[in-house]
Amino acid sequence: MYREVIDNAKAKMVKTKEFYQRDMLSLRAGRANPQILDRITVDYYGTTTPLKQMGNINSPEPRLLTIALWDPKAIPLVEKAIQKSDLGMNPSNDGKLIRLVVPELNEERRKELTKVVRKGAEEAKVAMRNTRRDAMDQIKKLKKDSQITEDDQRKAEDELQKMTDAQIKDVDKIAAEKEKEIMEV
Image 1 (cartoon, rainbow, N blue to C red):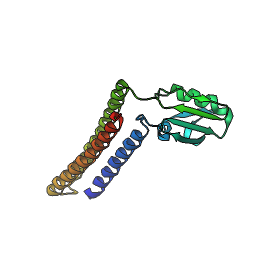
Image 2: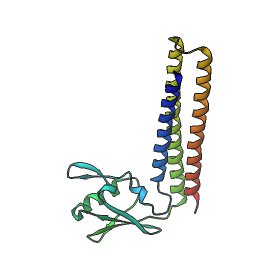
Image 3: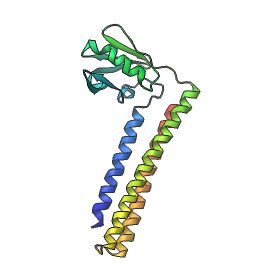
Image 4: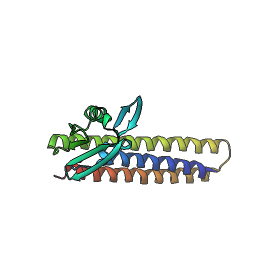
């Protein structure tokens, strides 16, 4: 009976962790990585379109990204979207290709990025704790409605707590790896 509650909570926590992990992949760490453009969307003919669906994004050099759009008329729109983003990069184009030079991270920007990593990790952990709280409430309701025994309730709550601790530990590990990557010169 309570197994379903725990399984649903675990699925939500895993999704939260995966979302945080994807978010960290798109965070710039001094090297040109096409995934840093994943969050950028462009207002393309009245539709908000992810940049990665508008062309090919490559990294021909360690500190350079190139964007080859399928519709060259969209170049100004893409440039404007990149400038509005929090990436801090200025695009340049030759009429066919947009070039983004990834600037070297200075110490101040590295510290800012580690704060972003920590903030994201804390948000992920809060979301997981909220999921745990909701699941605990459901388990207490099952006990109150006499659908499970007190022993089952205690067992379910212990299992839920251990699972939450494990997921939070994973988020901390992802955050630590990303911070290390950012601070490495």
